[in-house]
Amino acid sequence: MVYFQRRMTLTIPTERLGDLALNERDAVVDIAIGLYKRDQVSLGRAAEIAGMMSVEFLVELGRRHIPVNYDADDLRADLKTLKKLS
Image (cartoon, rainbow, N blue to C red; front, top):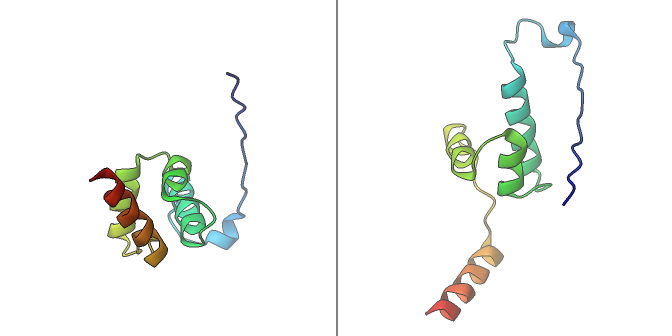
């Protein structure tokens, strides 16, 4: 199996950041969280973008008081799956 790696370079002018202390890892996590909050990626994909395990990403969401994307349809699907398993 062949995997292709895509890379993105993001340049933010220093004057836009001002005195903000932001390292590359924090920026990548912030981007992943933004994509997750906008429902553009799943939790697992956001964790992958952030370079974290899903559990670590969940902890980071909790630390930032960001709710998990989970709605009534997700609950119904989970309940349906649980019924099938029992």
